[in-house]
Image (cartoon, rainbow, N blue to C red):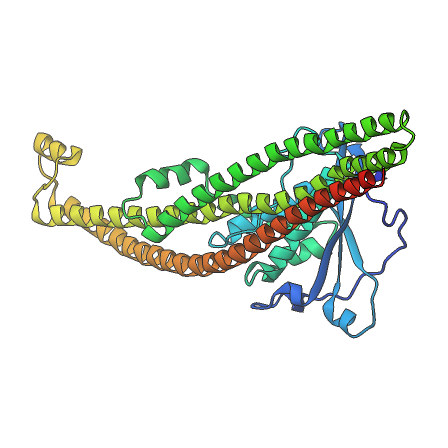
Length: 430
């Protein structure tokens, strides 16, 4: 049996909860699940157990809690329905959503291992502070999906929130893995598509630029955090020196001692400041990963367009072959033309049989081109609606995040000024 060790202090022991009456009607088309269900990732827990190859491993599980919004608004306050999920299950859910809804900008998961960290921050993925930030990120992921106009209606997502056992088997039964595009296929489409949609090409380039800008911003913040940490901690030396100095002074002793206390408090406050900064960094990282989700939609469009072009090309080739057989004229160099010259023309019966076969293939090809055209048009329509939704969300979120970060910096500077004003008052009293 796995052993447990809670990262968070809340709810060390849990009472047995009865399931909440959340029904599939909550995931009706066009209805955001978040309007029907309260969702949270309440805590993280470290466990030790055997993995698939019977090796001992330590891993983290996350407690998902849900309850109906209607019951809560009516004041009945039902007990929460809860279940545990590993990070790998969140990954499986997102991979399923990516394949099933290729036109959607699927919300990203928080990082599996810490990136863009400053030197005093642990990069260990089992570090309690990192696990707590990842818990917040996983909750944000679920809320993003639950508020999405399309993804929130998915039955597999609903089962993820309500079924602890057998959920993964249900996902694999959908056969989504067989529908996943290979990287080679997608790369081939990128370089060989002849008529790329300008809007998607520009959006793909924007995704590259957005990721680059946010990466630079996170690197600058990490360097600034390193230096800020040093500046604050150096103020602790002021505190030590003032305290030592106060020991040899009679008239000035009390003032120096008090000033030293202010400096010590200032030096200690940097830990809370930088912890708060990490939450702003995580908000930026979400859009760093969102940029890749945006590019994924654009790459899928390239693949859809490429498949349409290949279907058109194949149909054109078949029609040309039919014309050549009907007229007996070979317009382009081919192995078939060389064979006819070397070994003689085909008999009328052979030509008739090939014409019939080509007619059948052309009919099938025309139907395929029609289907590919409809698929491409539907993809463009659905993808652009979701991209516009994402752009509006991005502009709002990043604006609010940057404003909040600026307010935090202003507050931090004011506290620094206040510390030196307090020190000045101490010196005035000497």
